[in-house]
Image (cartoon, rainbow, N blue to C red; front, top):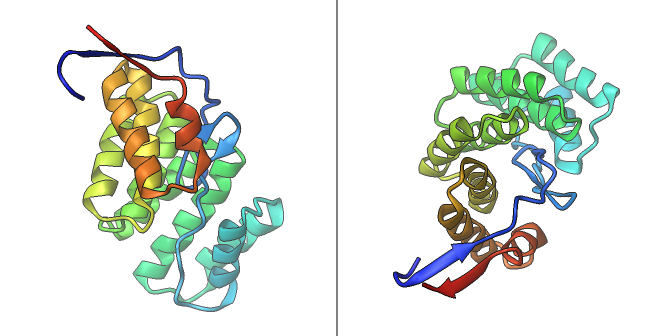
Length: 195
């Protein structure tokens, strides 16, 4: 932010959710499209459910069965945890989502999406400081959709009182994904005025 300017915003109007990568702005989720799986079988079906946002009991059961029965390499096993966690996020089952992201990170700590999605679950659990740290870690690992990490970090920063940091992150998310509306909606709440 430039010196000589004061940044203000009304209270965060978003309903705090996270959609597999993410949070909700004015009801519009930062979509978590799922983590791509190289394996076939139920793990692939779990990925497709996450990608399409089909968070039914059946799709979550498919993911669980894939984790129990599919012969998965560690990367695909971690991805399946991420995908099931994404489905839990869509249902606002924060604790279950966080457990899945933690399991994915334990298997493959260098998959950025695990950390980005973990941030979304932490926002849902009203733990914004931890969500900022998880977003930072996810961004450092170059996730496939960094705009979602910036969006989550913006939401978390705003909840911690860091209005300027939130503004910068919403702006960055909007720059990275100019056709994605949630960051633009949040930016409309901010006012930059001379000191």
